[in-house]
Length: 54
Image (tube, rainbow, N blue to C red):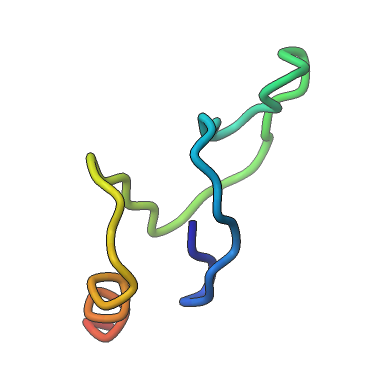
């Protein structure tokens, strides 16, 4: 996972958006902007190319 064009996590586990993976009573209460979800893992060069579009 990348955050602000920098690698932020390296895992093969499930990712949850908007809630904690272990505790289902805590949900994210806020706004998310500019979110993209892909059906495959993007390479570092693909991510860099996408970040240069702005």
